Image (cartoon, rainbow, N blue to C red):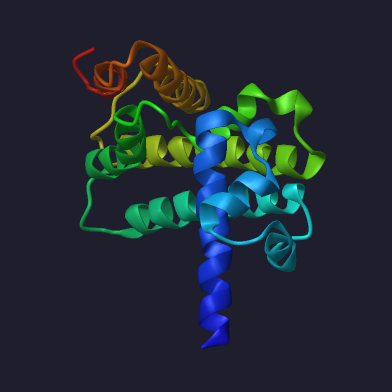
Length: 196
């Protein structure tokens, strides 16, 4: 029973930390604020995580692993076409675009990159690199299946697509217009169609 309670508290801490970073950035996250939202005392956080940096590392790792596992499963599903896999990839961007106060975790962290602890910088780098490589792999798969057709290199397109989606979330946040992400998604899809 105690283990279940510990896991629950630990996950609550990470959930609150994730939401706080997505809304305000890592620099604004405090242990006191997390403790108040979780409903525990500040020293209780230190039982699970030795420092604010340790919470940040755990949050980003968990977020990264979630993305990786979901997209690896989608890619390995032989019943899904490359178009369907790409549409699944767009899902979190669509969801975040409808939440005016939240954007992609690593997109927020990238905006305060220079002030981040080194260990968090490294995971953010891994997150961006992994997305570029995953998109490249999907583009190659779609090209082999003859469902994607494009003029530019896979590497350039992957960088462009990911940057456009991340930037689109920030722009949608400012303008309070979720439609901006749909416009970007449509542009990405059109770039991969054979009639360009």
